[in-house]
Length: 599
Image (tube, rainbow, N blue to C red; front, side, top):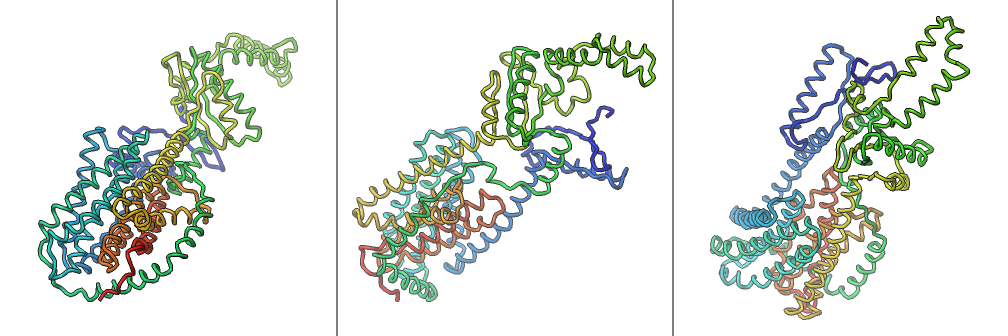
């Protein structure tokens, strides 16, 4: 109406106003500009008509809502995490120096990882930064064990001797983590290779920084009382004794309990499960699509033809096939050919209409005569119908009516002309396959393509994890023997298996982000086992393992409370894995004798 797409429902009138952003919808400046413009538009509309209501949809609005939610959650979760970790370390070490030196080691690793990735690949993927930064959960263990040993040794502390004693455990922990990422580096997926490169560089740099920086800036002994820490060690020593005495039947029982859950585990790589759209925006989008019948755009058909006529004929073949495969009208589509039929179809339609209205029966003329029109009116209509020319896409695109649909016409392409047919509603896989098999038609399913890639990444992660466990067993056997290596890795294997078994029992599918968390759990669990075994039955490493577990849970486990499913699954998996690794860490002492109560 007057060049504007209108809809009338339930006594209200709706006008469609479309707009394009100049910048990226993910840019904060673009989001702020769009939100300000919408606020001004609402105010202006309600000033003219108090009952006016403005609804909007678009990628930029979803991106803005997601960013607002992420900032709010990160501020809350990050704040609680930072306060908790700082309070814990201050309580344990009574000084800010361990906190600051630990940050220096970790920041050095992250900076090195970013630099090497940019040097090799020229760009840093967001997933690499998110997953690679999580290596802090492993790197933070290095300074924690150093300062825990310093705190417990007190007057007998010698920085160089302590670091020399810790170096085998630190080196083994680093190598087992590097093995996991080396397996990722061999995968034929650029994204996984970049994550591996970032993580390997960051961990190695944090390891070197720990060896060099800590003995240099934390040389003096800590003579303060450790009575509280000793009580904590004695409490955990009781758990060590219980677990070691009953390990022969507890360990097989844990394995038997986990196997059915892992066996029933399923996977779902659908990218749409990784986020929850803002409910208000989702309702507005559904309302706008209901009124306009515009397609979603995430799944569409690309149609190619030699020229405009050939293209429209192929579109009609596609839409006819879709209608035939959707008798219940569960799905819908939007196509240029619905507004501009091919010249061939227009001619066929004209022939049918002409025969009905202006044929030998002269139905139109008789009808007009019966209701009192002058005979010349019927003849004028017949002449106008005969002189009418077919509507072409170029002519239709110049009409105001075409404005909301012009994006469907792509125009000249590499081998002729092209257009897209967007889909909405529910379409079966068979219906989509039928359309995709037509000549000149290609199905573009962006969610399916991304989901397929995520599935490949997930399978790559699983194989890399399995390889890492096997290679770590071989590596550790050189120092501890096969039985000792198996005992050292027992906490790690249980920590990886526990979240998978829990997902299987709960009937929840595993995703890429569960496996990303399990890669981190593998490195953390291996560290706990190695430090516990190297520390010996007297339990010197207990404090370091305990502090490492608590800081990791506070740093990453709290992500389980995120409203974003991908982040929540990462955090929950990490939480379950770290807790399991910590509780199972005394298993690493099997074969080294019974633990002694700390005095």
